[in-house]
Amino acid sequence: MATIKLEIVSPDKVVYAADIEMLIVRSTDGELGILPRHAPLVTGLVPHAMRVKIDGGERLVAVGGGFMEVQPEKISVLASVAELPEDIDETRAKKSMERARKRIDEYKSGDTDINLMRAEASLKRAAARLTALGKDLD
Ligand code: ATP
Image 1 (cartoon, rainbow, N blue to C red):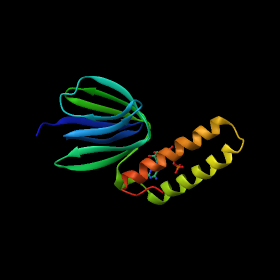
Image 2 (image 1 turned 45 degrees about the horizontal axis):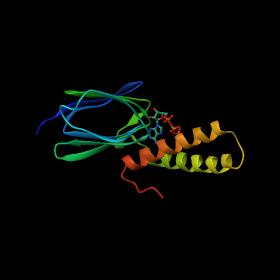
Image 3 (image 1 turned 135 degrees about the vertical axis):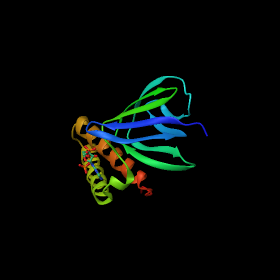
Image 4 (image 1 turned 120 degrees about the vertical axis):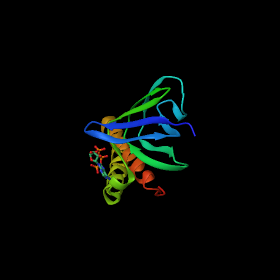
């Protein structure tokens, strides 16, 4: 099967690099599926669990946002934060989600929009991590 190179880089390291069959991401313009020989593209990414199709299976990678550059032979993801499931601390992500939900409730009853946006972004990062761990979100 045809493959395309994928490299996911966070500010401090290369999080993941492999020859893959397909990458499914949530971009700022919606969901995108990238196959080998895709047309060149640059887009923003929102916090979510990216789906990497490789060796006939699927691997999830949590990303907190960033950019993706696609060339026909290579996909480069420059992420603000990115983690493989084996590196995600589930308890921490659950606590972060609870904290963010509580703040969102508080901020909705009067505080500034900036705090609300920060709490919502934190909630989305926690949701991306729990989704990458295969957890159902409630
Ligand atoms: P928290 O509220 O738990 O601090 P956060 O979403 O605010 O989470 P980030 O700012 O996205 O955290 O990340 C800060 C650093 O901590 C990054 O290096 C990120 O990879 C790491 N990190 C955050 N949450 C987790 C987690 N649940 N498991 C593993 N690493 C995490």
